[in-house]
Length: 185
Length: 337
Image (cartoon, rainbow over all chains, first blue to last red; front, top):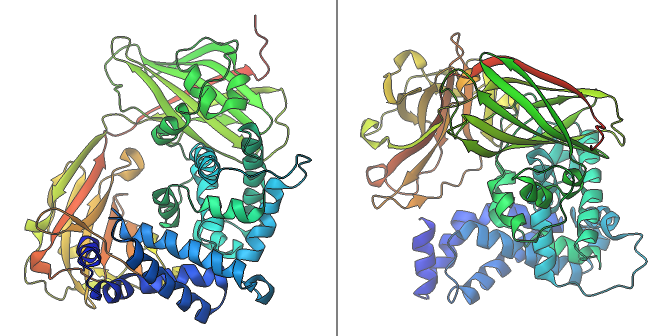
């Protein structure tokens, strides 16, 4: 069943919307959650929560791209679970490693910790990524949006693991510069 | 700020950009040069920094996209000619790992350039380091038959140095055309199990699967090609079922010199695009002896009965590339007069 019909079912409060969503996107969303959480059962729980969140938010939302909408929900819910359950201590999929790497973007600043507006921060990252060469942008998003391991990113892009790690390192440093320039760090 | 906030904020960037990153790509050799229209729109909204020495109408745009490199732009104004086309390097910047070159290509003898011209991945600042970059057409003056470009590159070195460098272009692609074609009439319903062969020499593929697995896949037998020209440079070869999946085969002429390419998708009868989710291989390609590219598009699950579907293709084709040898050598640290 195509997205528009599924969204229509949500709007009609027809619970078959959940089964249709699960059938169409269940495995895709589980893969996202599993990369973040590192555990199949946690991932299944995250997908269940995603469906629940979709049920609560559609309506009033009418997402133009259901896949994108669900993917963002799953990512956010999985990260929340990861944080709340201290899942990092249990291995925590790729999240712990990604967080460690991203420390590089914010480390070494003497300025007191400040609350950065999340929307402005996201806009700053978006602007930064849009101006990067396609190869660097792709590697960065596969690692930090989709939470693929460095080895998986290397495989997907056809690079060696060391080249991929090096690209990520340089992009993180440039991101730090860009965020500092924009006053977002 | 904590790295948690950063990781969460990354999740808020344009999801289309994120999903695009996940799509498989066929790697091309050389420096990939891309249009940056989307980036320009985004960055132009963020404000303008001070202008420096070089006076060009595109400067403000460049300053917003590549601030460090653009601030270092210095005039070069050196040119060369080949094939009746003059390349003039207007300015260059070297800033840390980054370089930015602005240039024009002008047709002195004919009318071969147009507002679709691009450097076909060949615009390259020759330096002894690995690098990657991007290019954008920043303007086209039809009266002067002159196109203006900015080429940004980043190299794997902390210091590029101040020696001489050469900027080189070897191909120009023009006459780009985009069209959408309804391929549904070419589907012979009901779809039949197709005659297949093992994929000839695999060139690339999309979706999951290892090279070994994909290289063993079955594709429609090109010997049965129906040879229906859907637009100049694109031929519909056939469609059929292979192990329950819909395979559609197309041939793109001379892609090395034209960059002809396309995407296929399914819609319902009202024209709404249907999302075809796949966990497997979504397409693969191979070259034949004439250097045409054969592409097999695979839909392994159909969201509607095939009678209710429309098969649609978006195609981009171009005239054969104009080849030449345009090179300008100049000092990287040119002083501002």
